[in-house]
Image 1 (cartoon, rainbow, N blue to C red):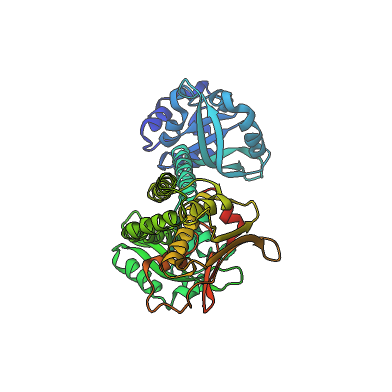
Image 2: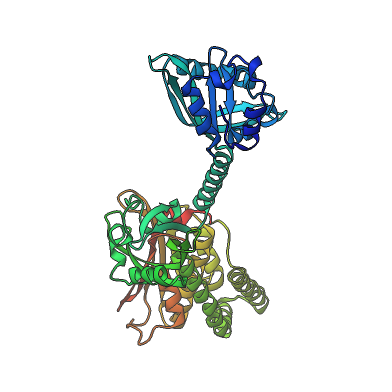
Length: 487
């Protein structure tokens, strides 16, 4: 028998001492073995033949690489000698082949010592029984491939994918990935769901269907443009109407938005990465800070008028110049402390009665009190504290300049309580009586804008002002839980 080609293993076939082998000289081999050997030597794919009762193994150059340091010594010897370290796993498979049962696996894992150290290996293979004309199994033929590198690379890619998913999930911004020209949702993190409305079924559905309200707002056109051109889209404070309320009602949100094309290894655009951050509350807070900053300027302009009013009120009721000096000095000190609080940006956790008393120290005359005060002992968080303090001082300032406190007989009643069916709302009532006839102002000044801005940091805050002829009436209310929350 002539062994044609086969590289290094072909030389082994041609130079092997077959007369000392259980297989005997090649010319005496069964035609089935001769045919398989020539097929194997002509193939680039790793191939193995295990033949005869002694399970003698023959292989080509492709399989020799898989044998590691055990090649070439393993050639022409027992299959068990070749794979002694994994024989517990291999024996059932080779035994099944000799029993006439083939086996095929896409991935089998072994810990081998073929290179002198333990290593994880993976193979795909098929063991096929080889029979003679009478059906007797003579041996086994195997075509196989080592896929260790592919498995490890796939595992690393999966690990990297999992890490990226974790990063996306932990991102403070909303992140979603869209695939294909129809922009089908593949992934969205919790922050993205929170932004568009928790409970939406979006994965596997196109944006135009899953978040249909954005179609008429032009966002599908933006996605189409990014997908076609590859040019990213980025914008800040984009107004968006989203059906994110508990009953699906629309809510207006302000979103920082980025659309960026995702590409395959060949550079082809395959989808879009969406990054979105809801900045509605942040912008509202910024606007409120700007309002407070503007109010600082407004209040500074009124300082002289305020000091004059305090001085006039103090001197009018003082028993002596010495007591007037002490009282006036104390009141101006309180006024200064109140303004320092505003400039510093917060009071910390306080109580409503403390904020009211602070205002009274500036604006009330203890010798002839013009205020009636009543209310429950109620804690208030830092941000609502600052807002409520400013509103109370502004109401008092307006009362001194235009309202009940501008005349000797005028009075102000302040009372607060917890209201609502579930006792879940804070409400404060400011009522003026005995002052000049009240009329709706012709223009809204900065002080009025501050009052109507409500309580920063408190949910569902409302301020209602009624310009009744008998005296101004103001009602300030907010969600109790957020009113008391420390921010």
